[in-house]
Image 1 (cartoon, rainbow, N blue to C red):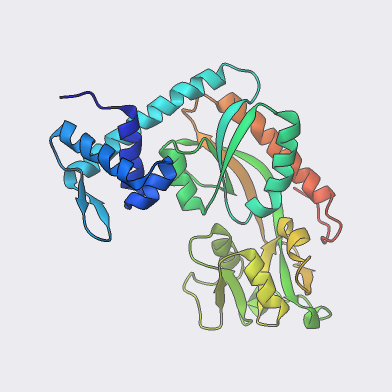
Image 2: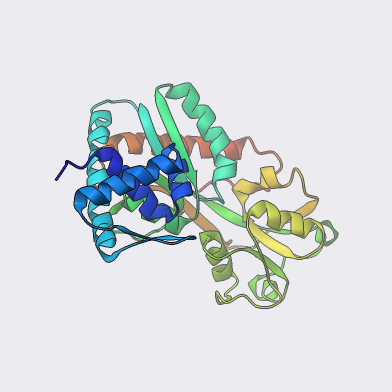
Length: 310
């Protein structure tokens, strides 16, 4: 049997993950026919079929499922060889794959990337914005080095480092700006706009309002905080957003903002990485930069109801 190549394994993993030749080829930066040839060669080398092919979908065979788990372990180990080399350096340098949840990414990343470009010029950072379950999976499989998420994630294999805490605020139409701030009981009776399923911020908002996860008829969903705030601006309902988002979202929407009475709803944002990562020292260093960027973001926001970071 011919030797398997690392390139073939990476192509196989991409196809197993996406279940589509075109999407996998795009991720691998090759043409779809070239990917097909590599997968065919791999199957011929193994003497077994790894994928069931149909006109619309590509599925792993039973052998393919088992093969995929082994391949992911191999690729993770190979990637960690590069991590070992980077870990030997005192400073952050080289390629870093960072994941960020959508309710943090648009607001923190501009400040963070600007700071990193000044202080860590040798760092080549790759960013991935997606919901927490996806980040946890990709971090576990070695496709990411670290992620910025809401804590806790309660994964025994991850290190969790707290970055900052922030409160949630109520966003209402301008016509409601002089009305008393509703408590959580009153909020349950209002038309509440929430992020769609999968966002941890949705669950946090529901928890504050003491509402079950099933969406009542009077509630509406949106795909982003920007969408929710725009819907509020035209009088469709009210929503909760984290303080970090205020300075950006109020620029293009005429809305009023109110702070809840104590105890205010809040969340803890942190950074996570695998406990086995050779880059733990560098990632801890990076967490300090992220924390400082968040502090700067809050201090420089002049249109935010002040509470300060905790």
